[in-house]
Image (cartoon, rainbow, N blue to C red; front, side):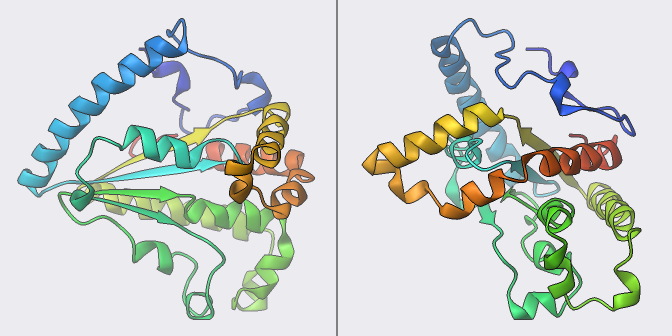
Length: 236
């Protein structure tokens, strides 16, 4: 499968409306996709053994998406074949008081994978220019000097991301960043499925519906992230 159409060029301004969330690539059906997933999972298992034995590189995989886009499922299915002893998954929720007393990257730096290991961030430091940008009141609660909370803060955070990821790359961490794209209509269907199927009720949160009201703002925030942080060493 040719992945080039899905890689974002550094500094390229994009519109998510130009990308079809229902695109299935070269796969004619789900059966073909599942077969390829099974083959690649086996290959991933073998490569993980090499990564661990070599003990020089680490792999950081970042998933970002709107609610119900399938981040948890992607982690479950794609990483199902790896040895759990060499793989760590972290989901970042609302920061604690201790975390707010450090710089905004501190809690993420604590969870970076060691050499020979795979680290997965289910949401990541990019939330600091997504949910925080869409909801400025969150920024007000962060213990940052008021003089440093101007409009330039978003560009400064983009620069921090790029410098941080380049530092990791120069020290042997391979960074793979994925955005799981779904339409607003598909999100609505998945929310309804979570409500109507008792075994999925636990996945539904009233806050998910609240955040849906800010769909357009999130799309603009994602587009800005992609434009400013897709780099040769850590592309989206």
